Image 1 (tube, rainbow, N blue to C red):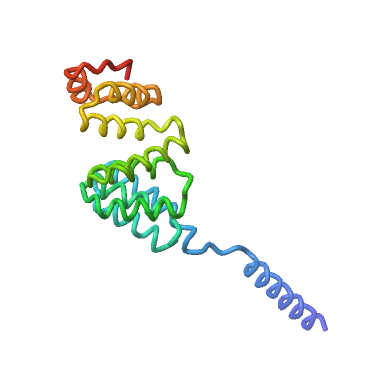
Image 2: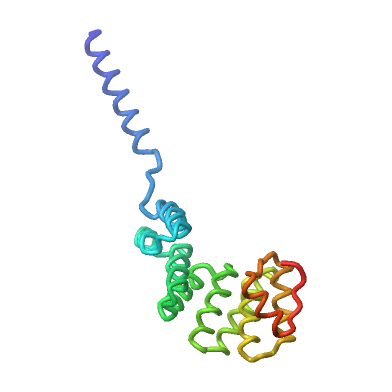
Length: 186
């Protein structure tokens, strides 16, 4: 009898353990997408754009709705001056997370590089609407005004960017100052 009870107790404990094990949440593949994005930015920071791109692509394979994955891909393409691809992936990122101001600012930059100015300015406006302190949007506006040689608006835009915390590279500062642009700080 004692053997039967021990056997039943063992079976019961095994059944409870099995039920508890199956009750634990199991991670889904998409849960690993943020890690892949994080590692992608680490490779990007080291200048390894190909591996960064691969990691961002893995993120969107793990989670087709990973806005940070699409953004990372677009950013790599922007740095590589592959603006058609960058535009495509910034649009994908914006579709999945329409609240990320940097996506719109960088989409505006890429559109400007393709000389699609009306839409580029709309994207910069959207970035500023979402985040009035989006320094990149102001810098991209300054670039647009510089193309038009509108130095008054360049100065206003650059100074807004500086107030938002953007640093102006010495070579850019020198070029702007040669055109009479006065930069406050930054």
